[in-house]
Image (tube, rainbow, N blue to C red; front, top):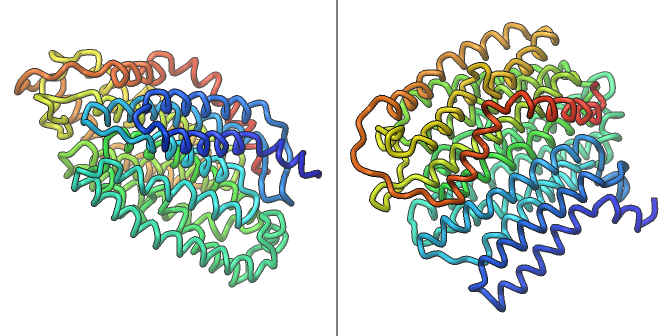
Length: 476
């Protein structure tokens, strides 16, 4: 393949990289033009999404970058989620007197890294994509520099992220040493019929590094503290798109690089998935801060996605992709609600703060109820169908016992979702809420429509596309 053809396959990444560089230069000369920068960043992300949706399929740069159904599906979802995060975060910072032109630029750079993760075809592009998006997220977590909790969150995220990067890089070096290549397709040849001891050790370290990126237990220790301390719109961003990118990368490594070693890595994924489900369910019971509570909810839901991937089949990958996109809608919408709510200029972040919300803000109370019931998995909300697909894939792969265990964890987690709903709808308010900002309210209610009642229409479109994406992994 010629170099020009390689560039054609990398067009979405080139759009993001070029846009980020131009906006960085523009921001340096006009740092107060934050509205124009935010609008330009949104246009850039939407242009990248269109470029990804219309890009040809193939492999570029000697197999280091892959353009297929899976990457297309993931990139479009990632870029749209990133575009939603910009107005939500930009206005939130401006209301607090913080005008950073770097914010939309960092979102673009994070999206660039996530796009590279979705298209990674070898260990080098894998690591570059992971580090590019991680470095942007570290800065975003500490973007509110005058807030001590945000600075602490950024520092914790960076220190623990450095540890996970070391695990990832060490695992990649072991795999390269024993496979003799960094390309996933060459690694698959070396792992055919089962990975040898060296490859298996490398894979374990690689799985540990990727498990950190998706907040899977027992590598979840950073998540509650970072979610609580980081600005709410930033949490809405990195609780959604980065998780999808990391899960797609996770699936591509296992399905393309280690498809011949499914019995060896399947048991590891089942253990990680179930530990995540139960850590998220039981630890969430003790939480009163909603950002920490949804951190544990995120851990539990990642556990369900990992169980789908553990099936080691095309159906499992299909279920994982569908689950992640539907969960992205729920978690982004819930944090958009939190970003919209305040009382006497104080953010409402605890369960007690939500008392009487149905009388003060019935629209947002209804949206938060929809997101909570969807994350719980109550029919007919989207989260119910997402869990059905995951459990069905696990059962069809002779992992019925794991599906039953996951269902038990879901029942346990129901308590903290229902407790929040009870407080919103039946408890007495402690004062009037402030008028919610338009952009946060609009995003929250618009996303709630994708949880209910338009979920069936969304599934009709999303699920067949996820099936096509799953076939790109070579397991369908």
